[in-house]
Image 1 (cartoon, rainbow, N blue to C red):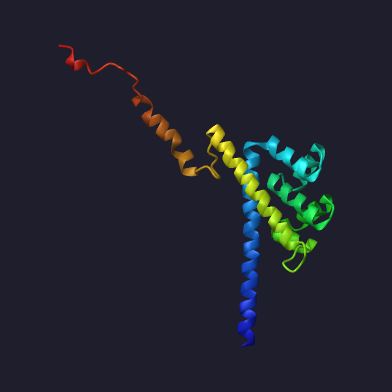
Image 2: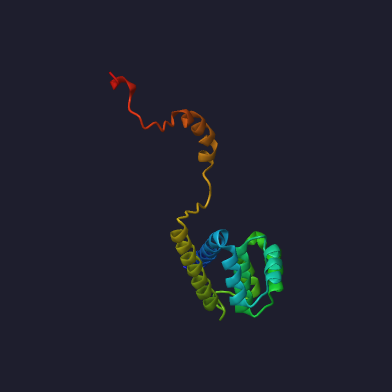
Length: 180
């Protein structure tokens, strides 16, 4: 009976960690997607929200693996935990291979802490904002951003272009066989 309870608790905690990673991954994907089309607005929003300078944003960008989503998460961790952003970047560089979930645990944003719920609520809110801004940008500019280019398409594009280039006929005249 004790083994069963232990296994159930272990599975429950594992599922919680995977859910935590998926929420972070969703935020990262949405922030990076918006930053890829409107970097100046993304940076302006970060400057206003977290009261940082352009120079500081550039430094955080370098320290967080040249990824704007990582900068957004690092700034939110610093605000929620009360730590300095440089300390958060140091934690990120130390535990990068384990992911942001490990950084959160090391800093003290655990499921049982008072910082946990406010952090994820703000992360969810900002992720939704980045998604809404990206969607409105795409509607205004008639732009569709693909996550990953299809390698198969790139591979066969030259063949397609070469094969069908000669068949592009823009003649407006009809066939010549009805001239008689």
